Length: 290
Image 1 (cartoon, rainbow, N blue to C red):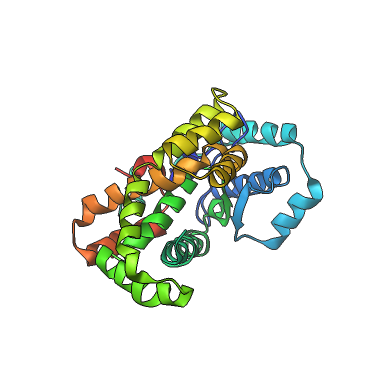
Image 2: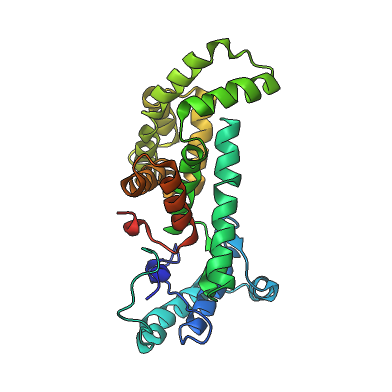
């Protein structure tokens, strides 16, 4: 069974299901899953992060504007009635999944981050295999932990040597921005220390979401334990209120991806690229990062 089976349609009680390659009986289920994600996107503009499928599917969702009750009913039928009747086409087959700085932004959003990740999934899974559930990317899904984790770790893949990255930034980016690189080493040292505090943001989010502290309390927590200036802390709280537990995808996701890649590649830069490429191009759940 394909890995996306474990994904859920956030906000609903019942979990979603996945599709299958062309000529596979699961293909119809995959298409219905994609339609349901698009339908949910009509209720939350942040829900659908990307869509590579037929334009008419998106148009249909916009025209129908199904209610949340209708969507939940369809998910329930799909998961508890339709899916159980479809046999696993390859019950004993191995899982295919097993076979702010300018550099950070460029690697995170572009290469080898989100752009490459989405392009590889679209080619390998949607076009080559016909797995239509991957034609739509639900932002609030387990997939996002890997997407953000690989995007953040992509910086270290592109610049495996910290010295090499610092040299590039000092000689190219600092002058381009009109910044004197004379104290760059101090800046990097502070950034390394600050990174050790970034899980304080996760704790602030947990407490805020659980109702243990309010907006003011979360802002004060970030100022005290994450050493954020008041405006930045307030901005972070607004982000948490909108995206909730999504915040863990950046640091926890990066750490999980880092451990996964380094366990398989060691200090070999070529192996690191190879393992990173496999991770980007394969369907996987966070539980697969072992």
